[in-house]
Structure formats: C-alpha cells, structure tokens
Amino acid sequence: MPDIPQTVARAPSRRPEPPAPTKMNTESLALDFKSATLYAIRVVLHSADPERLNAALAKRMADAGSFFENEPVVIDASRVEDAIDWAALVAALRGHNLPPIGVVAEGANLAAARAAGLTPVELSTPAARPAQVIDTAPPNDVATPVPSVPAAAVEIAPAPTPAAEAPADKATAKATEKTADQSADKTAGKPAAEPLPERAAASTTSAPSPTPAAPQSSSALVITRPLRSGQRVYARHTDLVVIGMVSQGAEVIADGNVHVYGPLRGKAMAGARGDTSARIFTTHLDAELLAVAGVYRVVEDKLDRSLHNQPALVRLDGDTLRIEALKA
Image: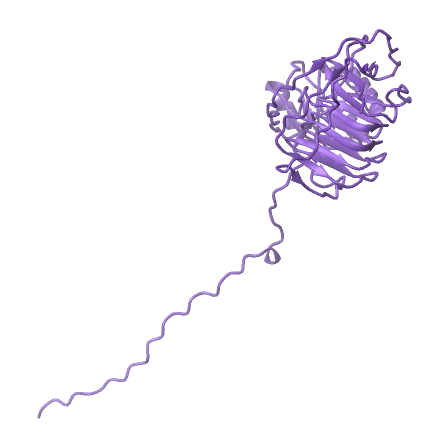
C-alpha cells in the first residue's frame, strides 16, 4: 500500500520586532553639557610672604573699589619659588569676595595647590596685534602738574598745540565690521582667564603728547546703545566701539582698543589680555577707572580741566598710564 503524503501544519514565522528607539534629549537626562566661556581675573604673585600678600591684596582692592568684587580668579604663582601657604591665600581672596577657581604653578607649589583643592589651568597667550604708528608732537612749553593719587601717578599731558596737532582719531565702524547689540549682562558672556590689573602706574614727568593712529584691527565689536550701571561688555580678541554713554557702574573691556563715542562715566579696560599697545579713546572723559594691559588708575579726584568731560586718549608708556587731551 503506497505511502500517503501527509501535510504538516506549521506555525507562521514571525520576524523579531526591532527595539523601540531610545529618545536622547535633554528632557530625559538629569544634566547636559554646554560650551561656555568664563571671565576671570589673574592674580599674579610676586612673593610667598603671607603678610605681604595680604597687604598687597587689601591695597589693590581698596584702590579698585568694587571693580573686582565677586569675580572668579586664577592664581598665577609661576614666578614664585618659595613655598606658599595656599590655605591662607585662598581664605584671604575669599575674604575680599574673590573666589579662586584655578592655579598656575610649578613643582612643589603646584602639588601643594592641588592638595589645597585648586585646579591647575592653562592661560591663553594674547594674540599679537600689529604695531601702531605714533606721530610724536613737539612738547608743550607749559608744564602741566601731575596730580597726586594714592594708587597710581598718571601723567596728564596738555592738549596739543594747533601748529603741531595732527587729526584726532575718528575711527568709525567699517562695512566689514561686525555690528552687535548685546544686552551686556554682568554675569553673561564672560571670557576665559584674564589678567588682573596687578600694578599701578609709575610716577612720571611731563612728555610730548602723541597723536594716535587709527586701530589696525579689521573688525570690531560695535555697541550702538547706552550701557547702564551693572552692565558689562567684553570684546574678545578685537576692539570695542560703544556709540552712546557708558554710565557710572558699567564696564567696557576689550583685548584691543576701547572707543567710547559718548560720555565715559564707568570703567574702561583696554588690552585685557596684556596688549600694551591697546588704548582707550573717548569723546567725553569722566571715568571711574581706567586700565591698559594691567596698569590701572582709579579716578577719585576730578581730572584737570583740559581733560575732564573732554575728548581724551589713555595709553600705556612702560609702566606709566598717560591721559592725554584730544582736539576735535
């Protein structure tokens, strides 16, 4: 009897279902990473003596008023070989509302700083800027007295004479310049570690009044509205141009030059990363603090009549901060 083929019923095959996609978004995570820059002050140590450090810190903070309060600082101990009492130094900085966030040191001091809870950081090197040409005017025969100030002796140069005067700097924003309106909030948009104005200007004698050349930077940060008290604007790796008033309590900072076409009544810092060729220009000088490449002066007393509320230039000559009148 022949075999009869039998049909065997098989269950239908089922393909495995792909796993459900995992949603990766910020809502499903408890944290996220974002890029940011941080404005910080560099405190450069020249000694390891706690008493000298405390005295110098108190003097610097008294001279600068509230300019540096609540700013994060990086302690630069690269020039100090003696052992540093890091705990005492950190406590002194915090006592002046200067929270340390990092350290630059070598050898045993670096190891001790790590043990004290400080994080080693690397400071950026300022980019080289083109040299600026200075036309030196003949000296004025009338000597202008230098006012006595507690933190810095600043040379007050007389206004240039009509015969020797060259055209004043009237640099305006070019078509290639980047124009930006920034709500310069004091707590936002702060760059990486910056140098602390660590030394006061040296005493000076009268000198010729140069006429500044136009800035060599090909682009600048341009602010076209007034800055109110508590606001800060920082121009990183370039010049800063403010068309409007800088109110008392406002701060304008640039790695290059600072131009204020309006009353400058707040604080201005040019060459924030150490550019000694940087300058401050304003059409109406009435500032609280002026600084160029770390040399600063707190304006406590009214300036000379030839400078107060007048167009002026602030530049650095060695360790001397010079304030000079400009004629329209």
